[in-house]
Length: 152
Image 1 (tube, rainbow, N blue to C red):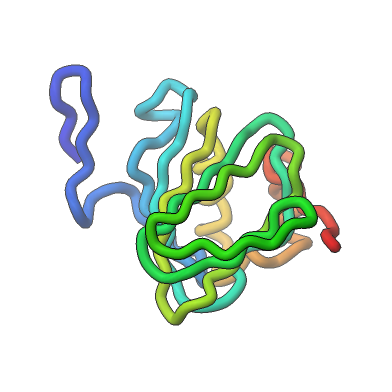
Image 2 (cartoon, rainbow, N blue to C red):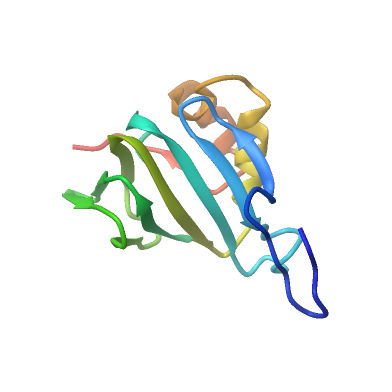
């Protein structure tokens, strides 16, 4: 990471890496450290399959921009497919879940406001696939704005 004057630069291969089992997160701009809480930007990379459990955020919008591969996102009661250059924004209080539908997929996730990266740091310390474990997510969500829900 290189900080230029008032800017923030992350070169390829830089950024905080968090292994989450099914997916790998690379933090490009942390809400707590870089953006003063205004947003978090992270890149997620991983294989085909679900990357999380159905959940919602009460005080945060979450946006997904697909870089490689393809994803199926269920947002509320609507299922959408997004490929490279596809963008999906999930409003606050909207249940959602997403899964990669290709062998390798990669997306940018913008979280507004920032701070949710702290949940991923904690999940990364708990072992493989804790991100998809509803019991683990329920316990951790008490501290973060990522509440597991039932969908469909």
